[in-house]
Image 1: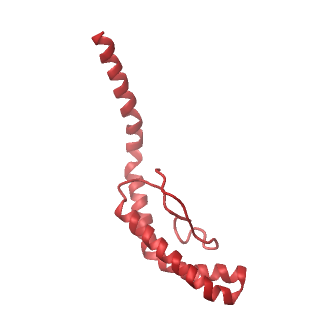
Image 2: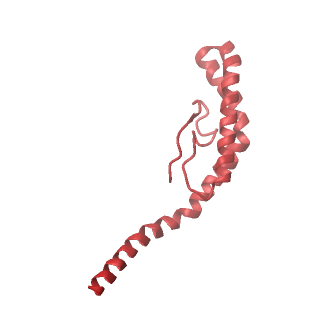
Image 3: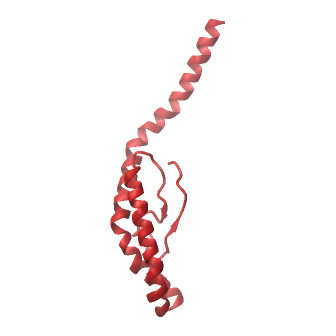
Length: 120
């Protein structure tokens, strides 16, 4: 009886530690990427204003891009900067970036959207 409990405990211990060992190998890379994404988004959040003005101006016209595009870009600038600051503050928890695209320069002709946090 004691032998079967000991072997069952050993089996559960091995099953618990093996997946975490494989995830632990990627952990430094994941937190480094998250820190880099956070710094980049916190610094380049202001670029959302002209980006959104250009996108809205192309699709809705110049006047719309100069007015509504400016205010929408301002909201996106604050959102990207705050998401970057949040990523810097929580870089030890490897999650996916909240803004999509992750970096402002990834797809400059697409308006920024935001998604929920997911573990990497």
